[in-house]
Length: 264
Image 1: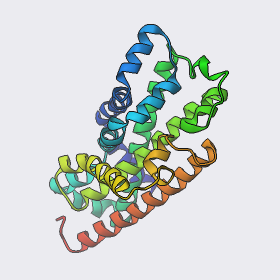
Image 2 (image 1 turned 135 degrees about the vertical axis):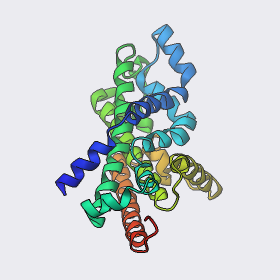
Image 3 (image 1 turned 180 degrees about the vertical axis):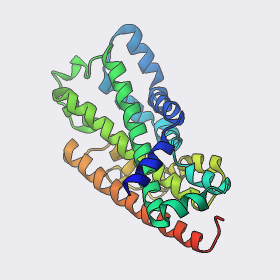
C-alpha cells in the first residue's frame, strides 16, 4: 500500500498545484476586491473584515474555488483510461488498492491546495493589515464570521480559516473524481464542482433552508452554531462523512466497471 501511495503521489505533483493555489487566492480576493484595494492603499481595515466581506459576496469562493480544488488530480483517472494506461496500472497496483489510494490522494490534493492558498493569502495580507480592526475593541463582538476568535486569538483564527479551506478542498475534489468515474471528458470533470455547487445553492434557496443548516454557510463562517470550535467540529464531521460516502461510491463504481471491461 505504501508503494502504491508513493507512486500515486508522484503522479499528483504537477504544475496544476501552482495554478490552483494562485486561483484559490484570487477567488477569495475577487469576492472583496474593492475592499482589498481600499485597505492596501489606505492601510485601514483588517484581514478578518476582508474575509468577512469575501464570504458575504462569495461568488468566486462558492463557484470557482471548487474548480481550483479539482485541478491538481481530479482528472487523473479519466485521463488514464482515455490513454489506455489504466489496465497496466491496475494490473501492477491491484484494483482495490488503486481505487482507494487514488481517491485518498485526490482528496488530500484538493484539501491541501485550498488550505495552502488560504494560508498564503492570510500570510501575505498580514504584512500590510492587522488581523482585526481596532473598532472591534469597544464593541460587543459576536461569534458571527468567527469575529470573537479573530479578535482575541488571531493565530487560531488563521488556522481555522486554513482548516475550513482544507475541508472545502477535499469535498469538491472528491466530487470531481466521482464524476470522472462516469464521464471521460477532463473538462467536464473540472467544471463539475461548479455546477454541483450551483445546484446545491439553488436547492437551499428553493427549499428555504435556514442558514444554520447550510453547509456552505458554516464552512465560510457565515453562520456559527454555539461557537467557532463547535461549528468547525460539525463541519469536519459532516464533510468527512460526505467524502467517505463518495469514496465508497467511487470505489464500487470503478471496480464494477473494471469487471465489466468498460475501461479497457
